[in-house]
Amino acid sequence: MKRNLGTNGGWVDRSCASRWAEMSASSKFLALVLPVVIGCAGSIHPISYEDRLGNVPAIDSSIIVKKEILVPGPFSQDYLLPVGEYRPTHADSHGIFYASPNGVVERTREGEKLYDGGIHFPSQPGRYYTYPSLYLDRPALGFAKLPFPEEVRKDTYGTHIVFMLNGEPID
Image (cartoon, rainbow, N blue to C red; front, side):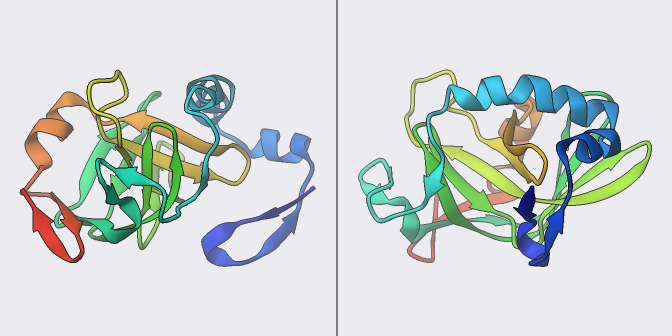
């Protein structure tokens, strides 16, 4: 099966069995559990002018990460969101996917890996998924979302994260 690896631009031929063998235990867990969570979000599609955050086009927004954000994951792994401007690239029925300009670093006992990913920002207030999440687009697994822990949600807006609309910060 051929798979576009995204930011590195290459194509790789690998069977599912070889990809599964290369995956860590935590990645195998995410491969089995997170598609169920993502499956509830509806189809993911490239961002368009019709995708909205409230009454404004999401395509006119961005998220600035001013300081690195560390998001704890399952099985003693952490994910690092680097500094930069995160631009909207995809949407689903729950919100907008803002891609990191430099990928997301997964830190495990085995070392570090870089994945495409960024921040999923909710577009419908008052629902169970109304908190920002970290998202990854892993070559063998597709999109997966991990909710930001409460301390990340409460302690980072303004100091670490700024939401932008048409190039202007939103309070």
